[in-house]
Length: 351
Figure (tube, rainbow, N blue to C red):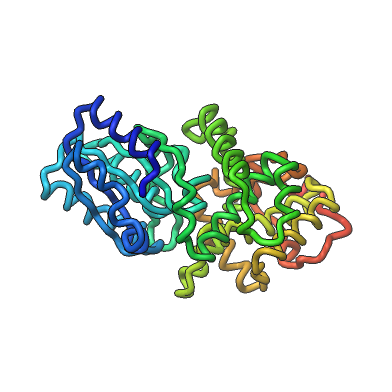
């Protein structure tokens, strides 16, 4: 059964805006469990559905073109409402389609994964991948309704996807709340989540986005872990062994925390605490010189970069970050060596 608040908000919006057509965009996995989730809406609007293959492979310009063509063939106009019902891929893809079809149609995200509930479904960033380059094409476009999350949808979430969402949750703790991170350290399993953990993440992102909606400065703190993380994600995709986004981000958090320590930002005791925690819940990829070189090539194409320099968000301490730390070049072998560095590089080595 659908969440009552979600249905109520949608019905109120449809009546207020005189919406006649609504299209649900979802993937095969969500459709398998929740095919009738929005059936109650059919009494108010004409409902249609588009189901795409599950997985990051659908987050492409080719899939977007197929959806645009379907909407056009059905002669859906600019008052057609697109309801993105799925995880991060569906929210990103659907938001991009909605922001561009007929120069913009109304939409909302109804996230079904932990990652989408606390991150991808919030904030107005939409986009698709360009081959192996993550989110290389996209727009800023905010949902017409910010729907509440339905945590009951997490009951059917596979373990890998739950762990992926946990990776993003760890990010929020490290950049915004030492108290939350300490609470996470007490967990025996990443599935032992409390609703207030989600509430913090959602509130933190909403507050950050409100202050910097178009990603000019403050919002960059949300990129922590994503420079390495996106590169790791792209590398695994290139090898034909894709890794879930939040799991790649958790590995990115590990190496960007290490980088923060080696550059003299993060205290040693906090780096060791973070490293121990991440190794407890995630498999951390060992960065050989060869792998590190490939990751660097992907990082050089990261959309956050400026003037050819790799852009990082670094930790000053747990709960506090420094965004936009730009590094034209640095000793990658120092990052590859995951042991504690007794003498962090001086700041003169970075610009």
